[in-house]
Length: 277
Image (cartoon, rainbow, N blue to C red; front, side):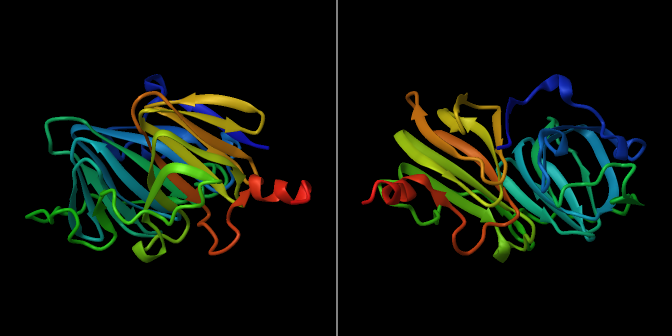
């Protein structure tokens, strides 16, 4: 089964080839893409220096953003949106958008791109539209559609104690939000929490934000903390066990979107049949 585990590496940031000549102060590091085995998604960390910008463009894929630090300004279909830390926004397929940073500190954010962008030589899926006029005043985050600020509320319904304990997942970018190709969510595992072994008919990506967890993937075990990431392919088994003295918090994506039924195969439940119980 396919999986990938790694850590954000500052040395891997650079200007993506497609943005050359169309941006200033912009760098990105791809964490997961086809080179890691993914067929559905690319997951990246992006950053924009103070005074930097990315020219207007459209993509033949959907883009989800989650801002970690600084303040990012997004011009989406002529509407100016300010995204402070812990804000998120959706850029639907073929939607004109641009970025700038008028703050005093670097803006850093997570990007999920789905369907996965094509190799440059295979198909052109990014087109630059030029620098549009930026309107004033800015619209506060949360006012436009498909924009929000994360709050740990309305968790997904929990599972039985046999399957998990001390785990909460807050999905904020889904069908009702406007996303069509992926889900984005945040999760928290309390001290002493766990999630038993399972798999899915989709790809999952996890990025550690704080705390630590022991993640089992197939027959291997990995320690994940802040800045660590893990990707599991279709059918790849995984489980979690909290370690340390503070909750483990993470950012997660699912691509394609989670099916309404039978999206999780819990091994504990099927092992009962094998045992004749």
